[in-house]
Length: 154
Image (cartoon, rainbow, N blue to C red; front, top):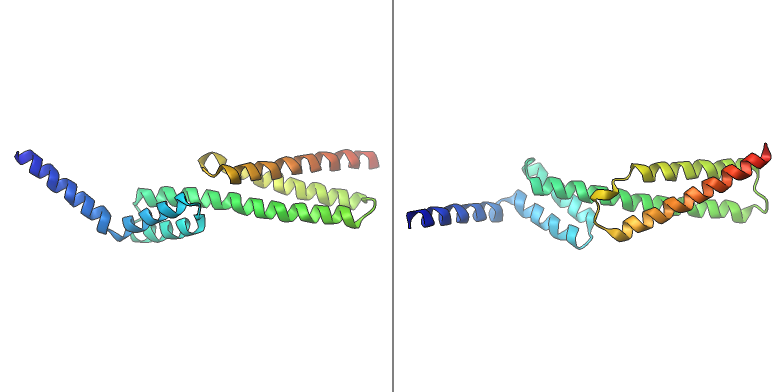
């Protein structure tokens, strides 16, 4: 019976520590915001939790995953902007000059390189990952077409 009370006291102490500890309270909020796909708020809250307790493993995990997810989101935004610039080059020119093709190839190289640096395996958001892959494949195709048409100029 004594063992039961000791175990109960330890359990209540641990629960109280995690419930009232500001770092763990923030990391629990961060986990909630991560689960509803508000990655910026999750990252901010996890960072605050780590300022209080830099050994908070939940906050470390959430900050890392939300940071990687934000990188993919940023990649998608930048890739969309690059795609719009490429389309603008194509629309404004009836015939693409060699310089335009080189510019498209360079933009493609940047997008492809940025995609290859992403940490897709640690991210749960399949929509973001799918969008990133579509951008990547679009720029692989653009690069291939630009390289082939540059060979024709030689």
